[in-house]
Image (cartoon, rainbow, N blue to C red; front, side, top):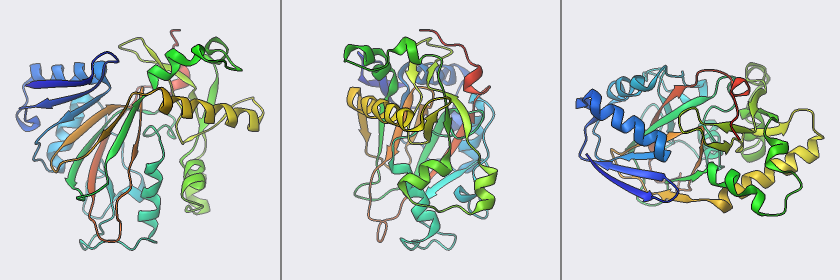
Length: 295
């Protein structure tokens, strides 16, 4: 196992070569798990796998979420979230199709499954087919933004924000960045859920902002005031960095810790390029608002 760290000082973004997740010793798995918890994002190079392989590997980290209905495809296992502009007949989907429009929402900074009552721990994304240009993924460490927040003049100090609870919704985020694409039945099935504004990682004990595009407002605050603060936080997360732009290679896997990392997809030509990404998502242990904060 060869390991390269992109940002050593900030302990962010690792690349691992010369390992095969289909033939992984328990010792090597524990090393990978420790690297994820330490560096937030881990690239596993040259992993030729199928969905069964990915699910088997992912289950080592914990219970897997089921994909949302708009992220599935007939014949694909329910643990697989498919992010793709390719349809069931291997055709490039029209750019005005519901799936393509929905997936464009992934181009806003977000953390996976924060719109679920129990948010996810980690995401495991496998590149099955990638475009020659574009279609990358950017990652940013939200810990640095929290730890440097008070260095600038702010209306609200970290200590004042540590116990705030927000509401998150995928219906809200998609309404903002892709338009009103969900019917009323789906909206009723996906209500707002409560999440902490700040979370402390259970292993590292370091805290991070927990916001992103799904974060709508702070409970009990004036709506305009809370959304202004969330916008300021999201902008500072990106400005404070560090950010890594990952240009995918076929057969790569990237694993990231949703408790400290925001990510977003980047543009590609949906009319002619093909992109097929399969994600498994490891469920969390409890609602974030029940977690302890260490600040």
